[in-house]
Image (cartoon, rainbow, N blue to C red):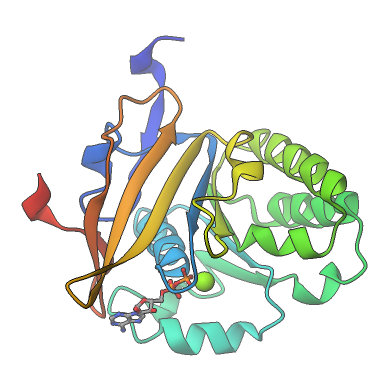
Length: 229
Ligand SMILES: Nc1ncnc2c1ncn2[C@@H]1O[C@H](COP(=O)(O)OP(=O)(O)O)[C@@H](O)[C@H]1O
Ligand SMILES: [Mg+2]
């Protein structure tokens, strides 16, 4: 397969597509990793709304046991969120309650069934790292490997979000199994906390390297700052 035959879809994050030759490869599985509050969920929502705008179906699977309404209440504050997409172009599924005591294979068939039902082009699993607490270490590795392989069988590009613990750069367990890794970071500078994005890996893509400053605001959600180009 030569480079020109890779289909790309826009990420929905302003400034990011220019860093990755036009967008995410389709189909593929991409990890968006960062510590709490770096903007992973906002990133994932922008990604789904971008698709919805172009008539693509989206599926948002949250692994947290918080009520979907709770998350939607917070996200509704963003200007880019269009309420009319909820339950139609973007289907939200809370799998928090089924995760307790579930085996890796049960989790994967649950996700597969949902995908078969909704037939999305864009999928989000937020955050996937929660499964680390539910499964034994070797089971977790196998689960990640099986999950990404299952996801690659669908005509969809999936974003997995990964919570990064203190002192950890990114969840290395997941990184080797996915096609792309995007890091979101927060740094303390001149007594201000600044946010950055870095493309660590993107298969088949001559991507920009190094950290780029990002901004999160109510209107646009997350965007790469233009001054750095
Ligand atoms: N309406 C808003 N305006 C500006 N910044 C916001 C707004 N809502 C959230 N944020 C910023 O985005 C961060 C939350 O991002 P989120 O996507 O929930 O992060 P994560 O999923 O990585 O924990 C908040 O910590 C805050 O800094
Ligand atoms: Mg989040």
